[in-house]
Length: 280
Ligand code: GUN
Image 1 (cartoon, rainbow, N blue to C red):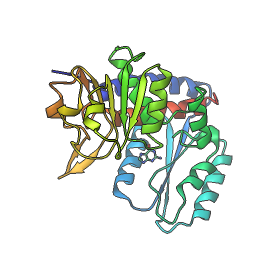
Image 2 (spheres, rainbow, N blue to C red):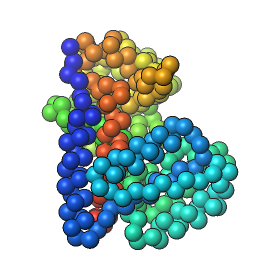
Image 3 (cartoon, rainbow, N blue to C red):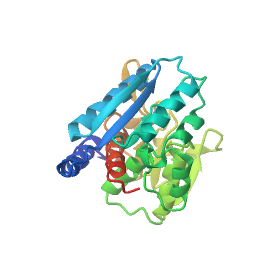
């Protein structure tokens, strides 16, 4: 039987500490302020944006959602970003993804002022992460590392397999695990014999967006299993890992919901605080 890594409880503890630091900032006349830009009507994005605002409120961070029509042009969106870049009262800018197809996501992300890129998606931040100089790290990978650290198991020298190679989760989390001296393999949809590879992992991070894809045949006895997937199936949120099948075999496992999800938002709050303090 594995130990469940309770992302919700861990988040709660970290958010309490963030709240204390936000209070200190406020006593010094600094009100940390996040601007969330939401374009269009994607239902999931609306929920994410609302959850981010709610979390900000809980810790005392000011936040506003800039809500734009689906047909907003790329140029209009760029001009809004430039305005937010120049606004000294705003410390963090987050453009909720995905954007409508007619807008080039890369161009928009590249336009965000580096010091306000609390998502850590700007290519300069990716480069800094690569060199071990990261200041604003992407939120989901940062949260995953914290969850692994919570197990108090050594990362150094362990085999880590990351399934998924996205720019926002798979690649950065692999780099972070490498920096902690794990031996890291990145697997993806074209990887041959995935189960054989995954079952060598002491640390298995799964971010593929395929509900319950990973069963016990992919998992080494005693492994730390981090499930990043979150898909709505018949109204329920389901991870990439078949939790019930894997839970007897893994040493530690994150649930869905209540694992990685709350940590992503918590790391966004932490990044907003870092940006507000002008540490970058
Ligand atoms: N869409 C899904 N996840 C994220 C995220 O972490 N940040 C942003 N900006 N958009 C997302």
